[in-house]
Every structure is written in structure tokens, then in C-alpha cells.
Image 1 (cartoon, rainbow, N blue to C red):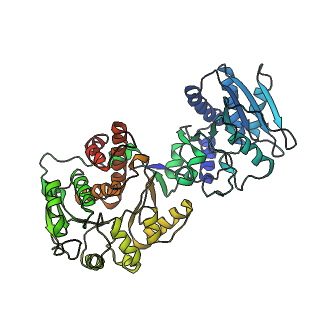
Image 2: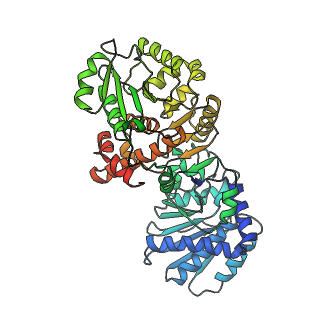
Image 3: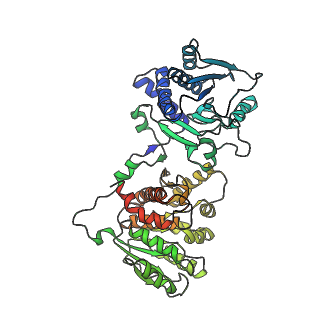
Length: 505
């Protein structure tokens, strides 16, 4: 599997330099290539009846903007260019492209200095933000912040080049008083920036698009990296084609410990998702009063009945199972906590822990060290905060996630938009599938079932997580397409799992 690398800014600069030296190509030609990719995207999105105001800084990001302005002008767009003179000397490539614009008829270029009036922008205009780019190292202040505020309040469509101006590519910005362009679209080069994948930056990045610009593949391949974006081809490479002579014994026997009084729907959804994900056999361990619900709703599953009527209180014999999932609808009863502790102590097979199993662990953190290595935890952010420590900064949360997975030798699936899977090696894999319609009770139970099914049927812990979150999100996307985001249900995702598998098989 060769997932798309998410490189820090300094490595992207090195990739540019390597490409210039080894392709070889001049830096000006590489800038032209990048800007041309943006131009091709823009002309598909913006009609030539719109006035385009290209706002440029004086570095390479501004140089990209100048090339885009020239190409749009040649294509018949009404283009105004504003140069924000915020530093002393412009870059070499900026100067080359500025000189190419200087004598073009009908193209207005305006230098903007600190003492000048702010730019005139109409809400019907389109603004190309090419002010600061990804090289920013400190917050924007002063009159540059005023320019950003003016663009944000103009009502115009804003397209940012590489990153929205004022946004750090690899670290958090001040969310209380941000001086960051709020783009409708962000066009970035070759690979996504980590900043695009954290929830607090959604309002700045809008819809982002990665545009290939031909950076040298040799550099990217050899570059060390620990952040990745999962792509469809990655999941195709992980998918295991079944032998013609395969039988149910080849795909394992899963145990799902789930449900308590009032919460048997969670166990039903997890069980059905597990069965849809390729498991050979499934046994659901349920309290006595959940027996009829499970048997009547999930005909393909076997049932193990707990001695207690209403909660998980005792372990079944564990010898026959290849993987065990615990948590959906489990409840927080003291008997359940004691039984979970006993499970952790006695089992040596892979565990998939979710929901109340995680909440019990959060109240008993010393148990984490006794989880079988390679176990999988699937928390949402608040559950992870109970396991680790709370933070309101997603950049910090991701680093806590990475450190937690390494420390305890676990796989952690941090649920949400761009669900992040952390591995014991310290890698993070971000998932691009899924949509806000999945933000409903039961969606996590479905994910638990999918990962349990994959893990039981022979996938490694890492591959079960990567493939599981992708399939979960893709099934959600298919359900949203059929029913609409507000109306889709977790059960709809289960029904779409077959079509999701077909996308990679």
C-alpha cells in the first residue's frame, strides 16, 4: 500500500528543489506549471462574465497569482491584479511574472501599500487569494490583517492558492481571533496539507482540491513520512480476493459482546455490519433479555446468553474465537466493568473496543497496559479525551493520538471527518470517505462491526482499520446519495456495504 503522503512544509520545499534539480526544470517553469493547473480548475468553476480580482503577495504564492492572472486575461476574463507590498524585495520568480504582465492591454495592476485605501471588492466578484501561501511562520497582524478581513467580509467567492492566507499548514492558528482568509475553495499542490484535515480549519479551507504539478516522484517516494491520506487504490491493494475453494472456516469466528437493557439496537447494528464484512461465523454475547432481539433481527448470528438479564456480567468460553468486539450498547454497570477486566486479563486474541468499553477503560486507565498488543480502539474525540487527556486543539489531539498508540502498542481509530487511524509505529492514516449524514447514533456501532468482521476474517489490525473506515465512509456516501444526508440511517450504511466492497473488488 502506498498511501498519499502528507508532507510538512519544509519537505514540500525540498520536493520543489529536488524537482528543479533532477527533472530538470526552472523554478519559473515549475511555477507556471502549478499556476496552469489552478487556471484549468478555475475556468471550469468560474464563468468569464465574472470580474476576477487577483490579490498577490510578493513571494512565490504571489507569483502563482500573477501567472493565473495572465492566463485568465488571455482567456478573456476581466482581471484586476493587486500587489500587496508588504515586504522589501519580491522573489525572483515573482519579478519575472510581474514583468510579463506589465504591458498586457486591459489588465489593471494596482500596488497596495499600508497607507493606501483598502481594495474595492464587489460581492459579485471572484477573489483569487495568492497573498501568503504555505510558508507563513507567524500570525498576520496590522494592515495585512485588515486586507484579510476586507476580503472575508466582501461576500465575494474566494479561491485560495496552496493554502488560505494566514493559515499555518502544519500547526494551529488562534481560533479566537483568527486573521485567516475564509476561502470557498482551496487549490493546493501535489498533496494535502495537514491543516486541511482538522475540524477547526474547515471555515478557512472550504472545499479543497489537490492538483498534481509533477513534483519528482523519486523524492516523494524516498521521503520519510508519518501522515498519510488513504486513497481508493490503497484499499484495492488491501482487498483479499477469495479462493474458489474457500469455506467459512477460512474467515474466522467473531465474538461480539454488546447490548444492555434499552440498547440492543446497537448490538443488532454491529452484528449485521460484521456479517456484511466477510466474517465466517459470528456469535453475539448478550444479556438474557436481549436474546429474542438478536435472534429475531440477525438470523445469521449465533447467540451466547449472559447469566444476567440486563447487562454483560460474565465471559463465555473464549477458546473458539479469532477476534472479539466489545462495547456497542454495553452500558456502564459495575458487573460489566468487572467482566471487561477479566476479558482483558484472559484473552490473547485481537480485541476491538468501542463505546462503553472505552468509557469503562477511561475510568480504569491502568488496564490499558494489559490490552493485547495490536488491539483496536475506536473512540470519538470525547471518548479519546477520557482515555488520554482533553484538548480543544485538534493538532494537539492528533499528536496525543500518535503517542498513545505508540505507548500502548494499539491501533486507535479517532472517529470524525477524516477519521484518523494511529498505529503502534507512530503513523497516522486519514480517511477521505464519509459525510455529515453519518453523524447519528449507531454509526459508530456499524464501524465496530465492520472492523471486527475484517479483523476476524484475516486482515491485519492496520489493514482492518484502514479498509474498515474507508468502507464505512463509502457506504455512508452511497447512503447519502440515495436518501440524502438528513434522512439516512446507520442501517442504510449496512445495506450499502456490498456496493462499497464492489468499489474496491
